[in-house]
Length: 338
Image (cartoon, rainbow, N blue to C red; front, side, top):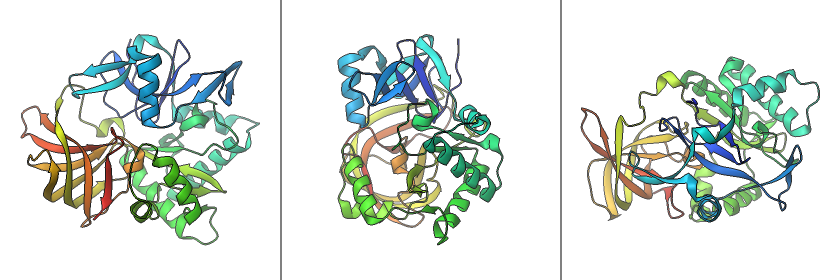
């Protein structure tokens, strides 16, 4: 049994645990995903007759996995990392954002959160002139575990559609009468307080990057975060075709030379003029990469950044090896404008 999963999807196990799928590259019989919703009498989300609680920060997820579900934590030799991987044979249901959006468009009765999600996606579709098949809705709405305060998580598939939607969203944010608007200072402070649980940075540095982001903001006074995902035919990598090796931890200063993949999850920044400030002193470090949406849109072309994370050797078959800085696995990982 094989399941084709990608970023934005959610899987439910036979024991009613919900996991967020990460990336587009997975082992043959396992799925790289992080635990998100667990049955709990203390939870505030209900689905059928079961009450669930949402597990928020990455550190909280790891703690829960270690204490209650250690069987999902495995060492993956290809990624040279202890990851949360769900055996395919334990998957009860695979939730796809595109399918959920189709259902929303057909249903007669939607609650306020679902209705606003559909309105935002319709707005993006019409403004960007992309097909419904390129759009989906992820997050808590995908698995019907949202609350009245939940945010909206649209997903866009395929580079061409992603760039169109990004441009459309940017225009909408600049319109005075648009229902889409950037975060206000008080909302940025609230977001900072939430994010700083597992990404340490100063409020000043946080505001410099977050205040100009297009992927996040408010729609009809509800938070949104748009996730851009490459299509299957745009990803050449298959599990095992690239070997990653952990060579240490470092803080670097570098200039962004190519930001064309900054909007995607996973995101990538090609860099040059790299200086290792502290830690693993290897070269060439050619890119900064993250599988976490919060590191999208962190920097633009010709901007100098300071970033701290895990240094990995990247060895692709029959190609020259290089190094990359991976962000998002540790609370001390960050990327700020220099």
